[in-house]
Length: 135
Image 1 (cartoon, rainbow, N blue to C red):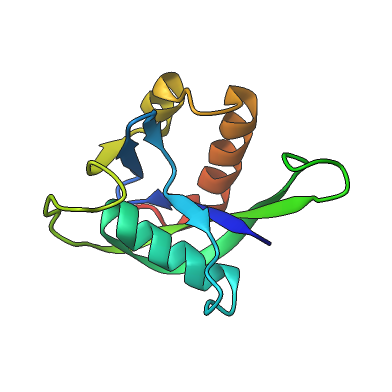
Image 2: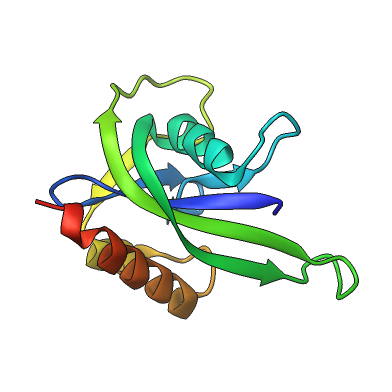
């Protein structure tokens, strides 16, 4: 595993996404050497990019990438979960311009950073796994 992404939902069912230069996207990024598991990376990235504290995380999908060639495969774990707390956003030298709260449908209609079919699958799967905890 070299990287993670987080599909974060509020208790009301809105997605919490990062407002990036490329448009709205899932918070996520590369694992750092000191991190012992994907959940640590997921929690750190969710905090850095959207200022949310995540509750329990569930693995949604493992995505294999041959970006560096067929002999150098990398893997991304996509997690889903509920936000425990939305901290105040303070502009600064953060990794994103801020956070956006969007319905899954609105996010998917604005998503342009990668494969829209894959993202639809990931969001739909995460929503189904998390929906029992959404009020």
